Length: 264
Image (spheres, rainbow, N blue to C red):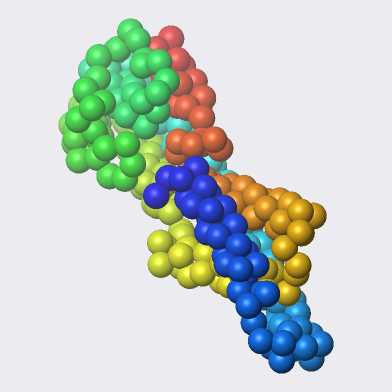
């Protein structure tokens, strides 16, 4: 489920839970509304509040760390590709075709990963509609594999070219590692079952609010604001958990700058 829809669903569930508590509260027998009963309920509510706060805090920290890692992986990926292109440029004009393949690869990555942004111009590349937005793309892997094979098939004619081709081959390996780091970082860390278990805890918590508080305007407004705040927190957590797309998505700046450097 998309982050905005999930946040709206959480808000509706929390408000409905509180409303159910308001509905049940006046219908409880008097013995269930005694001071001792209310005190016990409030104690359990405090326990749930603290537990939920800890879980939400840990989730926020975890997804933020994952987002930062994905951001760094994308920047490193762009840097490794630029360094490979410059290494090929140092080898000589014989690598012109390999450089063109590398530019085509970068342009295809940009067009497929950020489909809502303007597509790269001045270079030919695969149709992004035939490429997955996330995860491994076999056709892009084939391009990089061809680049590696052609680098190894070069026939250096001088000691300088031999040294350069050895450096290019090592740089190509580093670029492959950087690419797989990007692919690994695209996977979300929050599983749907865990998310809905968390929603259930929150629903129980807000239902408890309705059971222990009188259903007046002030209480209703405070509970609604609390539900809104938690829903916004859930939205931020889910949005950060998917590094590409959404409000906090990783920008295409690094890859576009890499492509611009390669096309100079």
